[in-house]
Amino acid sequence: MSEPQAEVATFPMKPIGFVRSPFREAAQIPKGRGAEHHAEGTLEILPDLEAGLQDIEGFSHLYVVWVFHRSEGALLVAHVPLDERRPHGVFASRLPRRPNPIGLTVVELLRRDGPRLHVRGVDMLDGTPILDVKPYLSSVPPDRLRRGWIAEAEGAKGAEPSRGKAR
Figure 1 (cartoon, rainbow, N blue to C red):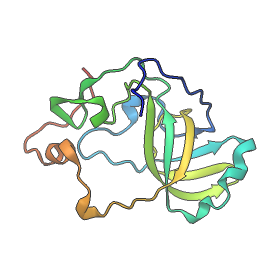
Figure 2: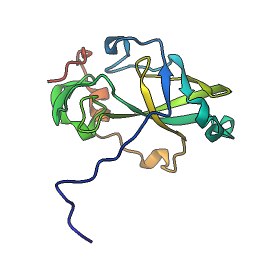
Figure 3: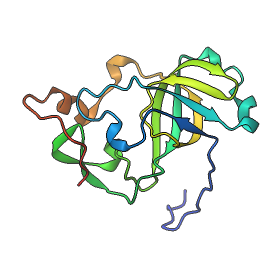
């Protein structure tokens, strides 16, 4: 096996569609301890890709791979909305300021209307480019799933809810 190269190829991607959501600004998206994502929205898949949605109605939940299209720059370590007590690495968080600004969200599929997927659980801005949609499948049994520092942060007593400042 060869050593990883410092200079690697780029991977051109183009959106397969766009998110329609009630969120126009990042500050509107629930963040921090107790944040729940119940907002409904639509994944508008490009019409020429509609055939790729065949049989998607049989799944209750979907992974949505998308782009933080309004994020600027990357932070490798920052305070996160869920835990202002100490900083965490970007790869151990869901921060938008990433070396590759890619987001991943699990949404509940409510219904399909042609190339439009009506979903619940959006946490993306209106107009967010979608890179891919996949059926949500998990083979990790709940008793083997670990939540890392998040479990500690959620259990912290007396911690103030954060305001989502990256540092």
